[in-house]
Image (cartoon, rainbow, N blue to C red; front, side, top):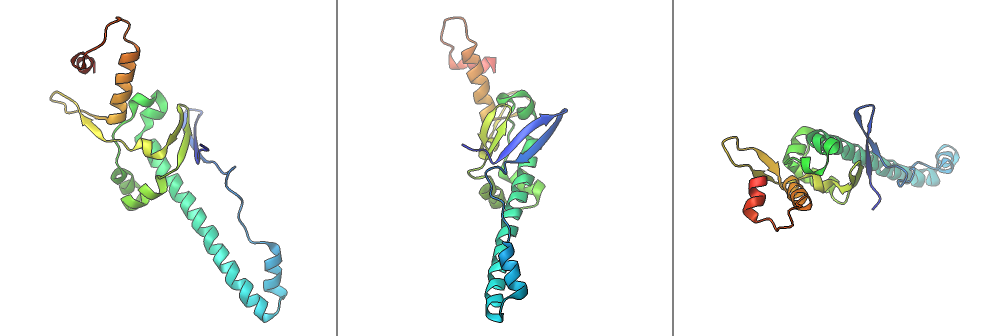
Length: 176
């Protein structure tokens, strides 16, 4: 997988980059600009139409990249602890949460984050990974934890079990 985005921590701050090494540089060939300036009327008309379409396409790609960056920045803000401390600190996050912050529809967030990946200190993750359902905690506080964060904590408990005995579901629940 080639990540679309890269997140680094530089001087204590998150810095998000678009991986533009894999994105070709788009522009209008100078030859067509010459035709627009010096060509016959039929050529200018045809080239003008094609250049207009090309500029629209380039602008659409730039808009897509801009939206991707805004959505990724919101994910980084919401999942700050994950990016600093690791996978077990993933918090519940919905498409609706991000959509509200970026002022777009949930389907836009879904479409833009689909099949997009981010390189982090903890590895490469699909952007969809950061949208996680919540699990209500027990007790009066009613704390909310992400499903993925709880899975990571259970994985840690099982890996750190050095008693030689299998842990019951109840024992794991108590330890959580």
